[in-house]
Each structure stands twice: as structure tokens, then as C-alpha cells.
Length: 109
Image (tube, rainbow, N blue to C red; front, side):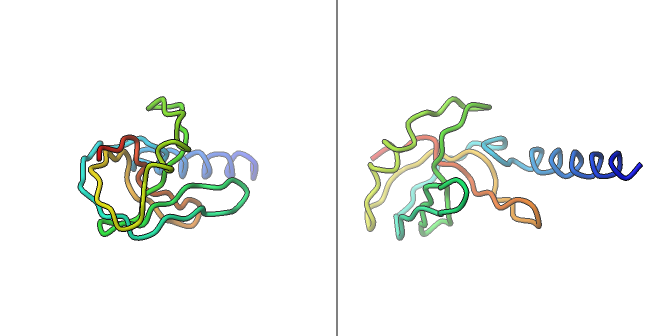
């Protein structure tokens, strides 16, 4: 009984997070941003983080829904103080279980 409750709760929270645009699901947007800070968010798995004048974004390899396998190359193209046009996918979602930022999936100089 307890196991079923836990599975239903975790499944519901996961479904809600994905419906809100976590991990690259969600809307696509194109923005012009000026890079203010580049850093790696260290934890169990490191994430390339990009602080801009428009908010914080993440660069990571994705398999679904967008096939993106060159996050190292994208991250290395960025320089602090420069302005870029970037294609962004997903939404910012922060709650008790998940902290996700929109993903940069393409950079245009």
C-alpha cells in the first residue's frame, strides 16, 4: 500500500515536471543575450551553466526530444561580455525535487 502511494506520487510529480518543460520539453524561443557568467554546476553530474542578462540557461547533451550531442563545443564558443543570438528550449522549473533551466540548443554569432 505504501509502495503504491510512493510510486503514484513520484510518477505524478515527474509527469508534472515534464509537462512544464523540463529536460528540453517545452517551447522553443530565440533570444539575444549578453553573457555575464560561465560556470560548471558541480554535483553528481556536472552541468554547463550560462548566466546572461536574460536569465540563467543550461547547456547539456540531450537525446529526447532534441538530439544534441555537442554541448562541449557550444559551451566553448561562448565568451563573457559578448552578445549572441541563441535558440532556447524548455522552461525554468524549480521545486522541491527538480531544478532545471532552459537549454541552449543553438548559438548564432
